[in-house]
Length: 175
Ligand SMILES: [Zn+2]
Image 1 (cartoon, rainbow, N blue to C red):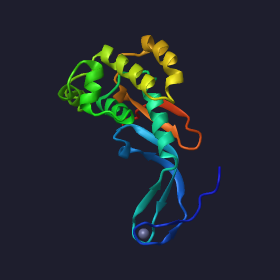
Image 2: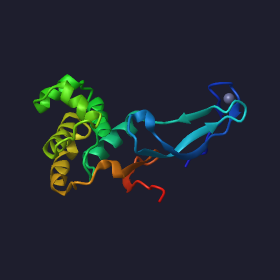
Image 3: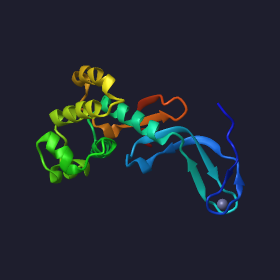
Image 4: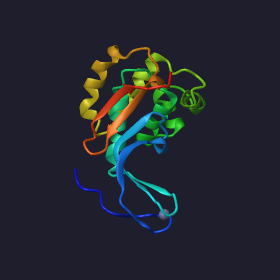
């Protein structure tokens, strides 16, 4: 792995050597995505932390690809991520699913459960409409019978930012 380069604190300009760590990527809009090996520059001068996320578009596509192949039910925030990844607004996604944006919004806020058929249709749509995910659409279809009824909230998605390897792991909660 290439050595971290010095970084100038975006707040005060102090030169900091970033450290590679895991980072909960809440800016993605997803509660349970952990980026592994992200450079984080903790400034000793002003206590600012800069998170340096490389190849953002590739990371987002890897997240989308993992979500359409998730072993568990899609959560509201995952549905929202996939919709935004496809560049659709609520009304446009609603047109594909024969529903309206109010319903989409309720699913995304976990106010209404996403039905199992809708979950599967959303995965196929996401794989079919993204040109780079499209080659994997048949694998997504073949995976559909294996999706469990477990909630996606019980799993964390780990993404290695160097290799783009993804893995779902159980959320560890303190006993
Ligand atoms: Zn600083």
